Image 1 (cartoon, protein in one colour):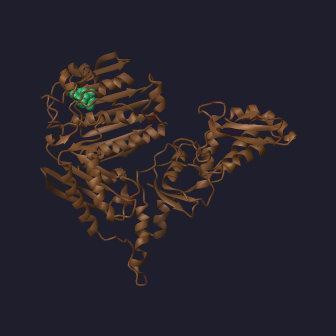
Image 2 (cartoon, protein in one colour):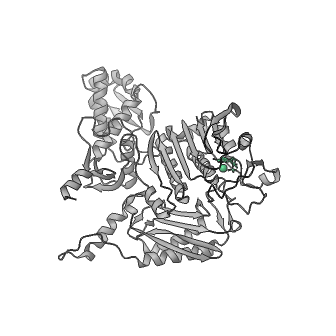
Image 3 (cartoon, helix red, strand yellow):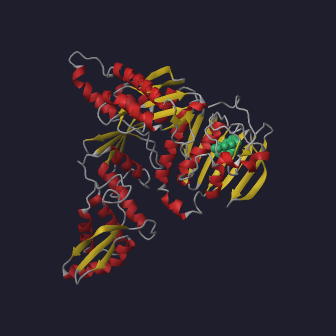
Length: 575
Ligand code: ADP
Ligand code: MG
């Protein structure tokens, strides 16, 4: 929105009750990503040119947002953490909101569910004030060295709230949401240099160039370079519409990359989105969506931002007119763009014949940015090859992943992690499985029951030589019905029982036997080669693989990851 030099600081004050009561209330802090959103919005409102976001443990351990904005004067720091205290509504007028925040609720809401530390300086003396709130009470209050700007640190989020903690997903899921949040905020503020660091690794950074196309490419990948067309600018109903749209062959399977930014706020105005979609629908393949950034600037009184607790939605008063005009702009650009063929001209080559093929290939190109994991470099998913390999792009070359062995590695580590540690609850099968054995086999199987239970396999004696398998370790992609399992039944669940039986007969004992069981189970139940995969499953596989201890080899020690290096490519082609 406004930059630091233009932004004059106004004093923080507690809103009068009547005004506070008119503010759309609701739970603002639902997940770690909501904390990130609120803190970055505060930094943007403070006119920051550089914002650094750091998270650890999916944001549940730590979230830190530092900015070089106008800062908070020391005497106002305690006030900033009070309910309905804000510097952004000086005139009591909810129709004149030019900032992202205005409710004075974020900091107190965060302080209620976490330990909150603010370090801020509002001048260039080099000294500011540090304030830590723990369980709602001041735990630290002291002067602290600090150049102008603010650092907010949130530790142990939701630790005092078991229900909210349980509702938060695995750290990697929270990190994905945080990444999405930061990308949206960064796209809405192209003049701000934004950095996201996850568990000490920088996962994204914008240059703060001020150029929207550059920012989009920095956030969503170089594949967009040279394929973005400007929209507008166009004046309608007192609003200025502008933006960017990618060439028609660059499409996405979901609406993830349809961005609408109203007065500097990334938002989802439902009515407008419907109108826009109706406009591009006939011009794009079925079920596909464009890469689109629509920027709308209008007078603050022509937008109602006070309709949604986390301010995700806004209502534009001239929604119909703006939507129609935006749709028209999009239709014109998409309709005029030729399907681009980036192929060398060849005499015996008919470009038209292959056009749909090329378009199809690029349209299946990556949608939600690189896959970032601790164990692998950031990788951009290209697709599946020969129904058995995943093809990915890293900054240093191409990567091939053997889908079967990748799944094997994931399952193996899951089973192993469950053993003893009991970090994951066994998955209770909707229908217990019946295991019938010959008497001698049954005797040997009974001796394994405790060991199997320690591995998460709950078997019960059901008859003289019959057993019931009631629960198994949560094996993603193998056991159907696991919630949030993007691999959904790709593996071989019927192999599970067979493996248990075969291994029960094994003579080996103790650790050797367990190791064999893990390896065999992983190998036999993992997704087969030859199985076509949907993109979410491919992403889930690579994501989970990157969180294993040895993402390059399967449990048998065979390679599963092949890199075709940039150097090799350059050397081969003699570039
Ligand atoms: P709101 O943003 O709705 O005003 P918050 O609880 O998020 O409410 O913040 C309260 C006040 O604290 C803000 O109005 C602002 O004056 C001050 N503040 C918070 N974060 C920052 C920051 N990063 N830089 C400068 N001032 C800040
Ligand atoms: Mg705020």
